[in-house]
Image (cartoon, rainbow, N blue to C red):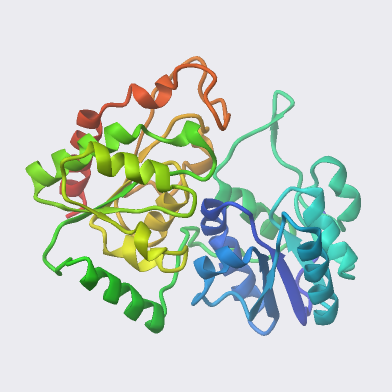
Length: 350
């Protein structure tokens, strides 16, 4: 291994992951770079819609908008990188495009996982651990920190993800919570029925609807239905199928930044295996995660206040966006089962 640090870096680009949950799970790596390079100007390269996830944290001095779906956006990002004249870039996505963006931006030192053809664009970095000639799934927070270890950075003992809520965002969150009629004494259970990954990750809307009724009648809980862009159909389905009095946040167009104080207010979150589950971990909110097609080893860390419910099936984990079968990995998890786990976790986390 080549020893990269200690060395002086004026300007560093960190290309953040694309998925919401992966961004949150990358925050221990961000902690590592900030603690090792306190005087370095660090810029985050990530989608504009995702910048609010890490805003208010201590990591970045600024952002570069990464528009993956547009060549115009690609060249705009390249231009911004050239203007910054960074000494070094660290890539968390495994794509060739991520390497091309910073290479064309004039960055000469580029580090990340040496995977696929993009290794030729890199100055160095770790190789993923293999098992039977396949990449061994490990928790993503550890996966990212291996880049820090390869670079000879001092890795902090704390490897738990964390998020920050600044004063202005805190006020916006409190204003919305008051609008929903939520009082300080109320038991609030968040329900997150969507998943941008695809329908295979989604527990049926009817199951969420029944769970809402159980939480309202048995726990006297207020129910906060969380959603994002493109999840209107599943929100409407949950609302239509449930007799519970559910607070639907979708009319307020809550973005990924404003979602932070809303999840922090929840006493517990019931969610599919998607981004908001990682918000809950970072904000110390108990979470019940309903997991279907994904491999649990990628997220098997910081589960002290999380219970994952999944069925062991021959076809799982498949990582397919749409189930080609009968979606048994999700449909066989019943509302009664999830409610029992919910009550158990609430008692344990009092």
